[in-house]
Image 1 (cartoon, rainbow, N blue to C red):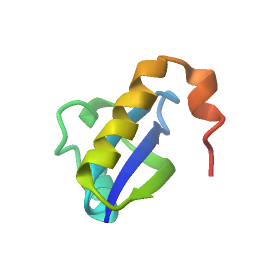
Image 2: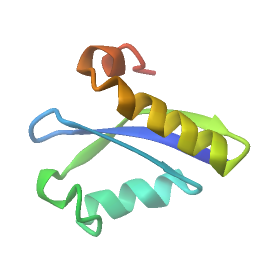
Image 3: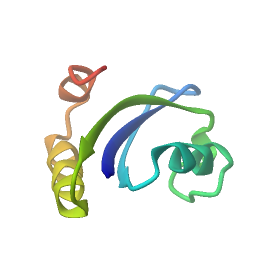
Length: 79
């Protein structure tokens, strides 16, 4: 199982979009400041996630969401 996920910074409300095969571990990595792209905006909360059977599907969805470049569209995805 693969996941496309969106995190929201509790510090300033910014979003981070990614994909992973282990959602819980990935969120822990972000919050432990082990991910360079997100370390300065911790703590992060899981805002949204979607399940996929293949890595390709998860990557494609991640790219689709990133291409929106729209906070409004992302906020419509909330669980």
